[in-house]
Length: 433
Image (cartoon, rainbow, N blue to C red; front, side, top):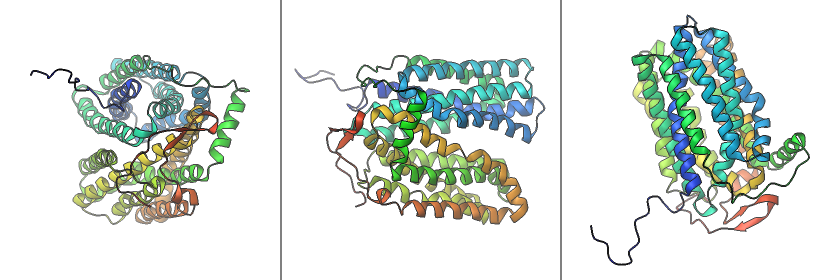
């Protein structure tokens, strides 16, 4: 096709999708595909080695414990050293631990304690990776395009999660869990190589600090000094815990007893994943002015899956509920990332992210462990109604925080030291307020 003189070439990507953002998104898709398949593979590897459901739980807990223990340290390290180097080092640890796990499974030599140790190394890598990755992503976009960039990133991530789980499950059935774990190790190697090419030359140098403890204290002051921030983290500490317990423990049991088994439950989870992709797509267009109010109102539907399981509703209704929940949860997710981007100074992003992650996962192991005793003490249906009620109560409570209701999308973003730099305004499409 001939071009007229002087006509510019069509850009290969949107102007707001810079090199760092594109690398981060592509690498996240690669690891998302591998990691979501490996979660299924790890469980079947334990069963293949002669373990039972309790052993599967032990291996899962072995990953969660170091994640909780090292998250805050990981955030301080990511704000002290170049974030891309922390990410690459964490990817290398994940690659080696998954490769060793795969080798044990493929040779038939895997023992429970070995799987727990290797999974714990993976959780340790995640603890250092997650705050660095979130800080790097938040630093990679400008205020003008932040909301759309985060929506596209999350859409890619959620799509990889859905595809990775589906493909991983099929591959476990076809060739066994060991090869799926090996593929995950390769995915970490590829993603780590991509992240090594991130350009941090335009990120301001961080001022020298008084040490790790001083960094942690400074991060805590940044976190604790913002009621909207710690209020929502506390909210999700409870919400994630009870929803995690309902999904991990009660959902499969209800599916077995009332819905026809694992197939319908897997279908419902697939609809949730599809909903998250649709929600992220919605947020590429919708920019609510009072972003935390809009996001928090969209957390209320998170109570619906537990209520649907308590009834229990037919599979078709459950799938519709799960899809709606996925959509609304992504509205919150994009709004939350946008709020962090515009309100938190760049040099403290990873430490604040670490406190966010810590609050989000800290109570999940406890809630999952207590799910069985709660069912024995109160019954499954009351326990599920309790999960739904707690989500509604903590979400309503956080709306009592004025900053949650009133924080607005701004046209100036915070830089190191709390100053604001001018940024182009985002014209909200619709929106609350």
